[in-house]
Each structure stands twice: as structure tokens, then as C-alpha cells.
Amino acid sequence: MIPTNASTPPVVELRNIVKHFHGGVLANDQITIQLQRGEILGLLGENGAGKTTLMNILYGLLQPDAGEIFVRGQRSHFRSTHDAIAHGLGMVHQHFMLVPTFTVAENLVLGQPSPRKPFLENRKTVARRISQLSEQYGLQVDPNAEVWQLSVGQEQRVEILKTLYRGAEILILDEPTAVLTPQEVDELITILRKLAQDGRSLIFISHKLHEVMQICDRVAVLRDGRLVHTTPVQATNPAELSRMMVGRDVVLRVNKGPAKPGAVRLRLQNLQVRDDRQLLALRDVSLAVHAGEIVGIAGVEGNGQRELEEAIVGLRPVEQGQVQLNQQDVTNRPPRVLFNAGLGHVPSDRYKTALLREFSIAENLVLSRIDQPPFTQHGLLNQPAIDQNARTLIQQFDIRAPAIDTAVAKLSGGNAQKVVLARELSHQPQVLLVAQPTRGVDVGAIEYVHQALVRQRDQGMAILLISTELEEILNLSDRIIVLYEGQVMGECLASEADVQTLGLMMAGSKLATIANQQGGATK
Image (cartoon, rainbow, N blue to C red; front, top):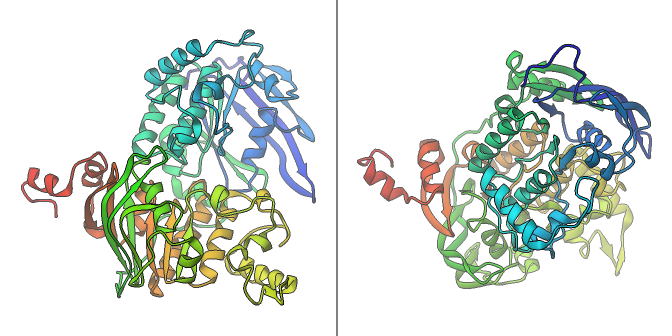
């Protein structure tokens, strides 16, 4: 953090901010936070603690019911995001604000002209500027690519580039690393530190405590809409921060015994699958998952994980090879057939492919079985059965919501993920494909999801875990398989895995080659 004179006002001060929502929900309760020049301030709290609401107020997306905002010592009132941008603010949202059918360059100029750029720049100028920023900050992306063609990680880069492109001096980053690989996170950390060294001020919202400790100068913790503590990161630790966030001690590592593998439940043989550009995304992928074990798929995002997920569940055609479920060939069969054959699926993007945002919790909890008894009888919906199912699962999976008829769109990320998990586990599948299970989820919900998966493993479920969180892969998996450019680089027991070897495999080195180079030391 750049040293500031005691008489210099904070770059941003939120003073006694209050915000209510319909239904009497108090999202922010008398919150006062200051941000200094050149500082990276971490903002922590469980899903629903009020972090995003507070930042949406600062960025002009919401209006406070009470309280004041000061920017560089001047009282400010932002009626819209344009007002905030005009004051030098920029925000990278947790859920992307991009138009899929537009190019990267077109997305960056949306909303222009602004007070800072009075004339709409031509496409070549925009593309050239994007290329300069991409090279300068290591966020490589094709300016002419349409957003729908990009991976989730590349979309995140576009959001970051959009903020940098507009020249913001005060940056709000809402879970910016939630979809980034470890390598991309390291690159982003370098970027953020350079921005702070240049005098920009950053608010960094994250659930990843090790990142907060590594990146931030100070941290502010919210719980139930209130500010409970602000402290320099040097004066705290992850366990203490978790306790402040949740109000109790949190188990940061998964406690699990050794796996007891049974019969093969899922087998992939020589799978070959193409991506949306008709390029090979999976090349001769073979693997097996046994009952009573968790097999983790590790790799840098964009190396075939999405295509693997979609091919298994019948959402993407398999060009060559075979998918077997309980020794039954289910290659290219519809998702309904796979569901009936015993496959559960927690998708990598819960809002695109798992939930209907405007539907209620109760309705979302029966989406996959809405046409079956007891939820449908004599061709009519049985609402009492649907409601009772919701009450049971909400209690069983600790889903925190005002009511069973609350729209899923109003839930926090962690509670929305619990809805998906509850629905998929409630029909007791023999095989569970779970992708990015804790993306954008707070520490309390991460603890719950991890423990739930281990419990299911111990009860005999076969689980295939796809995650770009290497720590999650190491904590949950019994065996680890690494994908690089759609090929299997190797397989190892999680108990024998080391981060260095996994990193080399994720960068394209086969395990056999690494072992030979190390003289057989790696097994």
C-alpha cells in the first residue's frame, strides 16, 4: 500500500450504509469502510453476508436506503454505473456482464461513449488497445473472438480487460479468481499488485482465504449484513478469518479415510469429442470410476473439461469411443436415459444448465422428477408433495432461504449450489458427475459440499470430480487424472501426488516422461 498522509482523505469511504430488500431482508446494516490510495482491501463474508450488495451500491447499481459515499473526500451520489465510471470506478462482476453473440471488442465498447471517452472508437483502434492491454497484463484474448466461443476463464479475462480498458482508478473485483486456474491466479496477483503500486485502489472480494492473505493489505469481514472486524492481514490468519465469517470454527481441510473401491460404475473408452469450433477437444480419453471412490480430473481450464462433462451426460456428441454406465453402453444417449440409468450431474455452471433462476426453490428441487410420482399424479402436479420435498431437502442440506417459494435467483451462490446438490443426491444416483462444485462458494458452504461428497463416497457412490481448484482435487480425490489439450497426461493416487508433478502434467508433460527425467523418483 502506498503511504498516505494522515490528513489525506480515503480514496473511498462508505459511511453508515443501510440497504433493505423486499420481505424485510436487511442486507447492509450501518456499514462503514474506508479504502486508501494504493491499497488492496479484502472483503470477506459468507454468501448472503452483504458483500455484493455493498459493492453494487458503491458502483451505482443499487441505491442505499441510508448512509453516504465519499470519493476522494467529496460526498458523491451515483444514480447509475455511468456516474460511478465517471468518478473513476470499475467493477468486475462475479457473474459475467457480457453479450455472448458480440465480439470481445464489441463488449468492451458497450456503454460508450462515456464522460471519459466522448467518441465511440472504431473497431481497429479498440482491437489494438485490447491487444496492448492483453500483452501488458498477461490476459491474452482475441479481440475478434465472439464471447460464446470463449472458455469461462477467457470470459473472466474479458471482464478484467473491460475495466482496465475504461481506465478505472478504483477497482471492485467480485470473486475475480473464482473461474481462474492456479497459473492464471498467479498472473492476476501480479497484475493487481502492479495496479496498486501505480496508485490504483482495489477492493478484492473472495472466499479463498489463502488468496486474501497473499494479495491484500487489510481485510474487512461481514456477517449477516454487519461489519464485524477490519484488520491488517499480517495480524490475522485463515482460521481466525473463517471463524469471523461464519461465527464458528470451520474445518478447512477434508477429513476422510481411505477409499474402499468396488465395482466399476463409470467407464470411458478411447473417447474422442469435438468442441464448438469442430476441433478435437478430447483425444482418446479412457478412465474408470469405481463405486466408493472419488476420481479427480485436474487441468488448466479449457483443456477439454467442459467437453468431457457434456459428452458423459449426453449434451455433446461422442465422435469415437464409448461411455459405459454400470456396464451399459450409454454413448450419445439423451440425458433422461442417463438419469434413469443412475447418473447424477452437478454442472460446472449452475445458472446456465442446472437451475431455472426465476423458478422457486421447490420447483427447482423436482426439475428432474417433475413428471414422476408423487410430484405428478393423474397428469396433474401434486403441489403438497412438491412443497414437502422442498421442506425436507432444505432442512437436510441446510439451504438458507426465506421460504420454499423463494426464486433461486435470489439465493446466494452457496445456497444455489446446495439446491443443485440436494436435487441430484435426492434420487440416490450410483454415479455422480460433479463439475466445479465450489465455484463462487463461501468457506462454510465449501466445507458442507466437501463433507457431503465424502459421505456419498463412503456410502458407495462413484464420483467423478472435475475441478480447476487444485487444492480441491488434492483434498477430495482418491485418484487424480490430469488432462492437457484433451489428452490424459497421467494418473496417480492422491496420497502420493505432489503439486510440482501435477503442475508439470497440467503444463503438458506426461507422467512417464517426468518419471524418466527424475530417474524414476516419481511413481
